[in-house]
Image 1 (tube, helix red, strand yellow):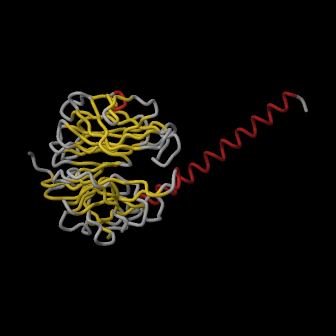
Image 2 (cartoon, helix red, strand yellow):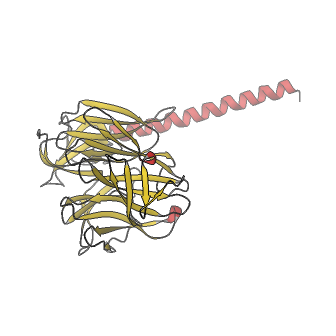
Image 3 (spheres, rainbow, N blue to C red):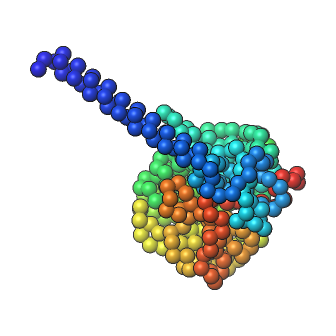
Length: 347
């Protein structure tokens, strides 16, 4: 066979392969659209404000059918009631009474990732690119600061060699405090700058201080750090803490702790750190692995998302912070819950 004929055959095979790939893509897209066009599997209303009104729980709707992936909300007093859908698609959500933080993966030939701030009516206020897959976002109590975490490499905290970028911004003007990796880190009081460190899971104390996780990729160790925004300094508080979440009364921190396994088989259990005493209580009543940044429903109750077995679907569960009762399903077909008091009201 001549060289020219070989190249012709290679070209024909390449064209056929590209055509087959395009065909599979077209079929997949048609199936995705068909799923999206079906009536929602839960009761919904459309066209509402991004944050609704009154005391609410804002979350990502994961119910199959119309409205999948959109920001939704339900009254705090009726979590199983009809959910108000917005037109805002997000992968991760956080909210205050007047602002919504939305992290979104925008798929295409070249996927890209975006963070957006919306006002209570759903009008975009700010936007900036993320370096990778969205992971976490939280506001400070007064809404003046917002934190975002995204993966630079990898797509989960159980992945080997994952890398994250965590930043804090001012919501008034978008001013960026820079990536936490550039801040000063004190481990047990000594300045340290390990090249393999990653930060994630910010939870704010106020507009000057926060807690977060710093993880060392090479050793696998994680620490709870307390951050000072004015000095760009963080100090370790205790170890084996991931994705902290400060309670409304500021006395305890909920988090996930590795209790068995490693790498892709790691098992995270919810736990509580008492700030005054330094004691940790693992809530072993939850037998499943919880890979989420826990939220507080109130001072005694935790909320977190759990996959339910259906592709792309999850449920929000509630758990007593003292571990006295088994977990209960709180909102079906939901993810990334935020409790908002007085939604839609100006401060």
